[in-house]
Length: 433
Image (cartoon, rainbow, N blue to C red; front, side, top):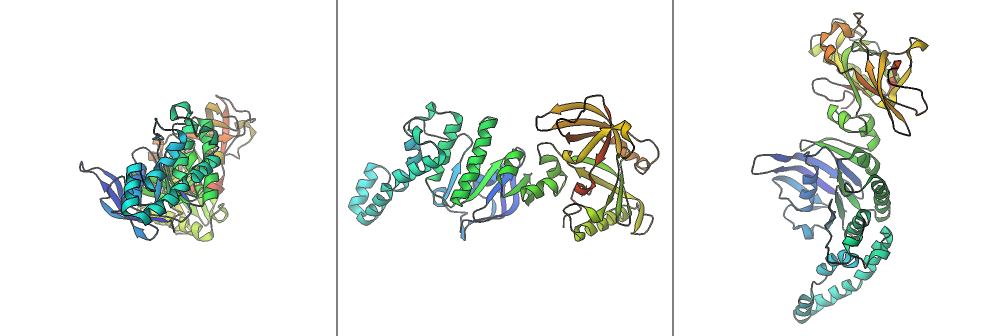
């Protein structure tokens, strides 16, 4: 078993700062787990704690069934790939890849000579293992497509080739757990894409537990079997990439995950049977909870009850649970691809009016920056003056051939199936347990 279990893990420095705060996480056997978060969130420190490069303040680390808190890094059966490659500049690619195994299986000439005299049986065992180093190095080089580089020095290699050598040096050890600390951040966009494909292929071939740290959401969502989002030394959410993207656990995850952040609107909410009515003074939506895409009936009931409790706890409800008039406040989130825009002259079936501020042509899609217009008609949102501070900007992703230009006046519609509801005070997703 090469699972990794972090139990209430903490790291505090003498200065008083806390890098990791009571973090608990199970990394399953043969899983590719990605730790993602902003700079300073504690993700690299967590990786270094697993590797044994940092001392633990509190908690436990288990690799398999063994507690490794006091085990030296070399004895933890892990291999780590760093951001800066850390290659020996005076050694060839072959020696860079084989050096660790050479030390592990006998060391230098003097050490081997002494062992032959005083530990002949052990010397014979290590000699047999050293005989297999050449095969391991060449096999790893073949996997990574760098067989033709084995006699070169690091300064003769490109950035992508150096990263492959660093990967090869880890692969030859055949460890129980691979640790990657932002290994692709120094590469250009095309090389990062190639290396992501390479890493996924290696994981399928080797079936080894891998823990990968990055601040890049695209890397996290494309590489991970599961993704753990960190902030402030704590785990905010753990789940499969699509779950993290579509149903963020809180407002931090909603803002952080995704190449473009989730649109977030704070407004007034009321309930009418299974219908939820939302209005922030610019955007009005009516959603039937029974048809929410990807949500079961229990999750929908949970949203409905929590919206009622939200209104009740803040003194905003003045009707029964089945029909709460002006029931309270809520934050609604929706992704850019769930926003549709049409020319405003086509009809009144849209939920808001907006002006197109600017347009980003991305090739495969177009990102439109929309400035919503206030209704100003005393509607539901108009009864709550605090919504006037809302940022009126909404982002919409449309097909590249859809005619849209800065200055256009458009109608805006949000698909009700993908709405995410958040408590405005705690920031928590109301759909979550």
